[in-house]
Figure 1 (cartoon, rainbow, N blue to C red):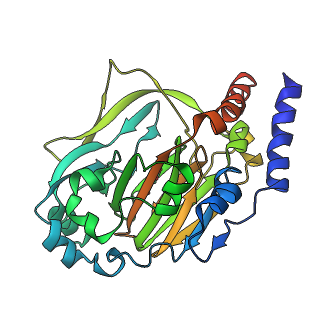
Figure 2: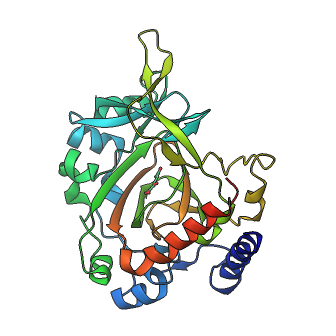
Length: 312
Ligand SMILES: O=C(O)CCC(=O)C(=O)O
């Protein structure tokens, strides 16, 4: 078992040395589908693409005033937490946000400081909330990225809208999607770890629960007793507890800040942790990953990391 563990650690180092950059590279123009498939999707490497959506009216239109007028009265789902951490480990629980239905303008009131409310608010309901909850805004963007759809031979499975406070954090996790993440205003800060760093990333298994704000304004944690336990990463890459998770010392995170007008290609199964400037707005496209091509290899990595204990 020790030799498998050692090989996994060497494998990760080799991946960094042989094909991963120390910083996320930039492309200055949208790529053509075949080149993008060959150079980025197949090797599963992230990059930031500039000038990929400069023609979207959203870039100049999406001010708070415009959004108020266009969708202010729409009722949307907002994630509310006491500490900014939605879907994250808190003690021995995996705690999800309170999902509150609010008008878009009341979210803007909070973001603009016109109204004080306890808690941290983040419009982050995935599952295509742009198309489902805010279809009026689709005229200002595109509902797919033509070269990515051509490269993968399909349309995105979800188009999501993100708007949140500076203290809203997305805890470290990975998704089975090829992700094109477009920042419309403000900036988003990503910490990225390749799937080959999996042996250094701790996982635990947690009782699911949700936050609920009581009448007196305090938040309580309510167990979802009949829900199955959830595997999640307890480590905070902004302040990793290296005494508890010494294996993480060997991880080599890439950090990048994606600015307004830039698009991050975040490959499937890369671990990511996300923060943002106050009021940053983003739209992203999730394309379900190609399981036959990528999954078996990463599943093997996952299984080996689990059986050797990894740094869990
Ligand atoms: O923007 C965020 O806060 C999280 C983004 C994310 O996790 C994703 O697109 O998969």
